[in-house]
Image 1 (spheres, one colour):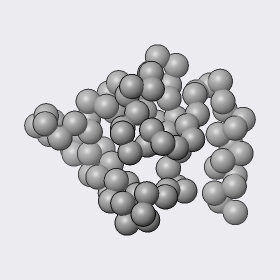
Image 2 (cartoon, helix red, strand yellow; image 1 turned 45 degrees about the horizontal axis):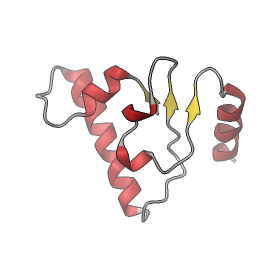
Image 3 (spheres, rainbow, N blue to C red; image 1 turned 90 degrees about the vertical axis):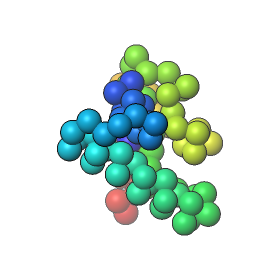
Length: 87
């Protein structure tokens, strides 16, 4: 999951939906939150990736207690996580 300022605005439920892309982003986010809760707060399929100009405050609360990667600084670490999940 790539976290950017735009992503943070898209997932805010207090804002009205603005087009199909916005609705899809919000729906996928809601599905990820539901999966997280169903797995008793363990998630193995979501790794937050923070872009250069995005800070930790933009990470959704339920993802703050997990490992995250800074792009492009941690690109090798991210690729290892992806490789591990695929196996």
